[in-house]
Structures are given as structure tokens and as C-alpha cells.
Length: 115
Image (cartoon, rainbow, N blue to C red):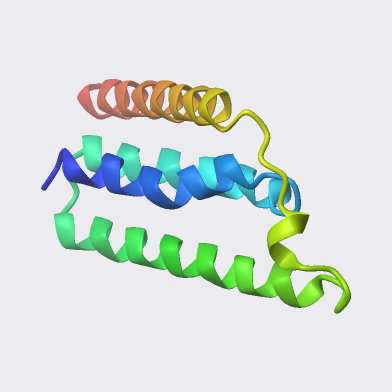
């Protein structure tokens, strides 16, 4: 279960990596959620709390997509509005950023707790 949490987090994040045109302002929020989630996972906080955070994150992604579709003009189709932008490169870059920051935070918190 502990190794599943970071992998499961990438699922909604992958969608944002592919469709970053209209929802690009939410990517920073998902990076913050990813750092928080993986840091908690590294610190071995109780697993059910991580599952709740993951589910809330997925619900927030779905609600942001629905909200963005309602904001589009009625003449414009939502599917044609989203323009893919090198999804593999974006997903790899954001995943590396999330894991790097998470490792730094975990090491820092472990160092502070030992002193």
C-alpha cells in the first residue's frame, strides 16, 4: 500500500499533464498536493489518511474539469478546446520535481526531529 500511493497520485496528474491548456493554473496546486502526499507517505503517516487525501485530490480534479467545461462558450466544444502539449515530457518533469521536493522535505523533517 505504501508504494501504491505515489503511483495512484500520478493518475489525475497525468490527465493534467496531457490537457494543460485550460487547466494549466491548477498544475501548481497538484504539484503542491503531490509533494504533500508523497512526503506524508515517506514519513509513514497512517495509510488511510493518505487514501483520503488522494480521493479528495481526484474529486478536486474532476470538479475543476467540470467547472472549466461550464466556463467554455456554448458554441465551442470542450474536447476540441483542450490542446495536448508534449504530455510525456511534462509528466516526467513534474514527477521529478515532486519527488525531488518530497525527498528534500522528508530529509529535512527527519534531520530536525533527530536534533
